[in-house]
Image (cartoon, rainbow, N blue to C red; front, side, top):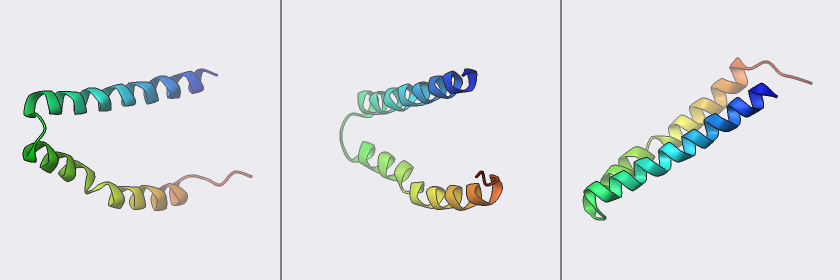
Length: 65
């Protein structure tokens, strides 16, 4: 039970930080080319990280049945 609450709180904090980051980015830089370039640069590595995390998690985590 404690672990579920901890994971839920961590996920909620992650969502809040992501929202605040994007809000701050648009509030400071404003919509435009600089904002588009920064968002594209932060999103571009995500597919590679997803593939690496998926393959490594299946190798690291034990299988449960």
